[in-house]
Length: 295
Image (spheres, rainbow, N blue to C red):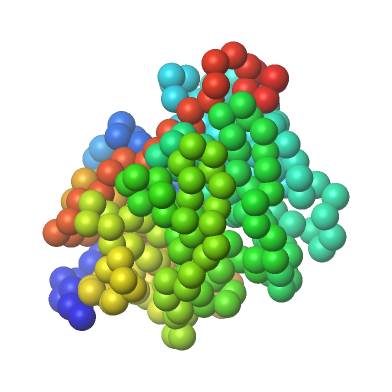
């Protein structure tokens, strides 16, 4: 295992409460401050502050760009899934609206086949209260997994045939076979377990290795496809939460939430060059016509 010796410091002045859902879309670097309901973008100048693209009155877990609809995002937000457009927010479904204990959406991403996947969790992280949802091309929202405590990821291999999903509260990352034509999941296997922290946001690089933020440890780790730990990057922030690859640059979000005395770099956005690049985030690709009969 290689430990990166480079000292890493943020350049941007922002400090986020719960920075997650960071994605490189091929044209923009976007991320969310979940509990503030803010969708943010990072200007090209690495020293410039983040800019707000949208702000919701509910938590905003993650977004993916919608293909052929510039400025439109599909989002895991509040108690369900919505479309964030330049002029309107349109809800596709709110499957957790009446759930008890109260739940909110968490991390999410599009897969290479153009579907959107997003997890939910209880505000108080009650055991087994979370689920994983899939949004099909027609806008239908389907619960595909239940009995998860804190789902993070998912992350997909480039061919869309494998999904990695963390249950952060249990310290486990599972690997699921995926049928690209239907989005059906096969039986999972355990990819890895984490004993010294909580696996959080993930990204898969061009060699099929998984970069993973490990909450509570101040580290981001690269695991090979067989689960072997290959590399560790240490940060001057204790709660790494999200990762993405912009080519050969690894971007990392962190959080201040829950810290009694945040340090100067907690909640910052970090960037570090790595050896193996990764692809841009996938788009959600809707079927022709209104999504879910609504838009």
